[in-house]
Amino acid sequence: MPDGLVRGLGDAGLLAADLPARHGGRGLSASALGTLCARLGGVCTALRSVVTVQGMVAAALSRWGTDEQRARLLPALVRGERLAAFAATEDGAGTELSAVEAELRRDGTDLVLHGTKRWVSLGEIADVFLVLARLDGKPATVLVEAGGAGVCVDPVRGQLGLRAAHVAHVRFDGVRLPARDQVAPAGFGLSHVVGTALDHGRFTIAWGCAGMAGTCLELAARHTAARVQGGVRLSDHQAVRAALGRGLAAVAAARALCLRAAESRQDGTPAALSDTVVAKYTAARTAADVSQDAVQLLGAAGCAPGSAVGRFFRDARITQLIEGAELVAEVRMGDLALREHAVARPAAGRTAAEGAPW
Image (cartoon, rainbow, N blue to C red; front, top):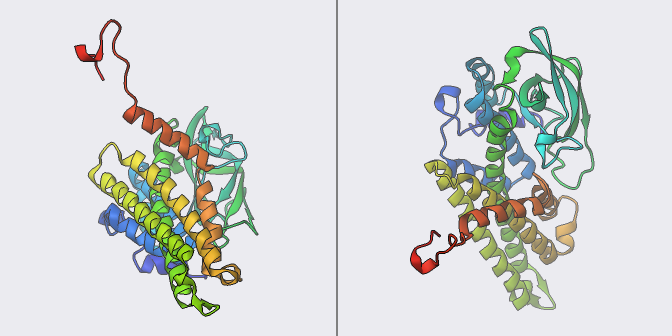
């Protein structure tokens, strides 16, 4: 990722752009933020991840931070003067963040943090971390400055995808923090602070995946329309057109679900969370499927070093794993389906015709 890119995004007004003007943002609507992430996702997943992670931390601070924390950090995050990272995952706490073992203990008026976080996007270059830990046995979140005593960053190299996202493992070895850096009271760290961050991230990833899939479809269509083998254009083969048709339908469906999620978020309806879960799952799967078909259609050109389609194919697999394997999202959606559609049994001694509740 080129030096100066984050500041450039800030100068262009693309970081935490959904924040209200009082915090330096542009007050973008949910659909406008989604469209931005789709455009960025169609160029580079790591580029979109900068907007996602910066927005996750900014959203959490905007809603749950103190006035001092907002004034100190939000304008700098919006301008790109500071880069944030979200540090929650551990070896034994991936999809089940309630199992984190990172610990905060009190020492006079200060807090002391011990723990190791894994797979922190932008962790290698972040200026500040939003860290999930436990304080007095309860989930708590704190802000930790990078480069301070006890903060050890171990960059990750050679991962399958998101290779430009500066992923790192980060160890916090007795990091001393002033009490002012705690975000919300202990007990609210996971359900409120982290919940807000994850929901924001899930939403922007969904749109980014839809944009990624759209670009893969476009590149595949252009290649097959121009490529001639045996005197026949690839696009003249029915199997090729069928693959493009499947991609067109899948991309349209993913975009429609992303738009539904944006509308429910904007309206503040109770379905906002479930709509976002469904949109992220579908868009990530669409990106994986369409990019895989695009690699097949481009052949060697899709696998060559520097191929955008090949890069998207790898990145799409990573987006399917964010928040855990797809099975985790499927179980969550199954719970939603049961709550929405399961029919209650008639009360004892009554039939449906007699007006039993349904």
